[in-house]
Length: 296
Image 1 (spheres, one colour):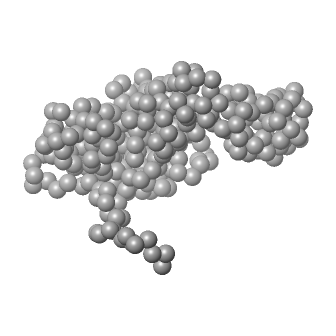
Image 2: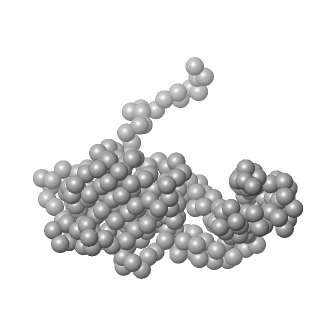
Image 3: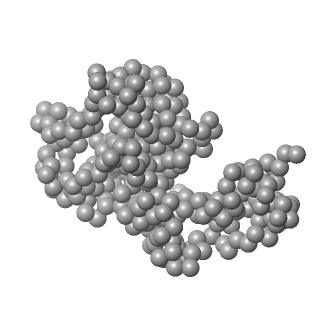
């Protein structure tokens, strides 16, 4: 018997009540099952228990709130039905390897310079780098010795799931202090190969201040890598302002497909090399508007 519609009803109920106290009886009722029957069917259909599923969805919601709102960590913990901030922090760190506050500072505006929802997972496969995205479990990232560029080590990002939620992305990044590059112009470059990239991908670099404000950013969204491409060198170039604190560099895949990165370099360049950063004020008016609060 096909129970997918019943299970979907329970998932819809859970999503609508993530910030409420959820009981097993309520969820089972939404699915039209008894408690016992529901638990058995739910795990059979999704391969995960109901408690773990709810926790995962609440962690994804927490990540969204951390990056798209100014709500403090304690209030998010209470909103998502945790008994304490400590319990919330422990659950978040266990899932994504970073505590909520550090996660909020680490990941901002990789895909879109206005908004982003991400989760972060450190990895042991590529030391020094971080795997992140809004649903990183739908992707795999690993070294690929069979597809290297002129003998240089490469990594590959690919989607594991045939069905990706809209806006799903994965990125491999690292962060380091900006103090050695203050006042300089730097270039992050590498060779990228792509296969069946339906949305887009590219290199990216972001400069953050000590207060986590974005000072400079380029994610190649205005010159994206799409479809099938052979090894090609790409670069992003940014100036490092005086109040810079952190430099973030990485490669991202938005949507489905495969991307390889090899031959990565980070270097200082002279002023004859043009910067590639995005104008963060591009959609703002030149002067103040409607100071009289006219409704027309």
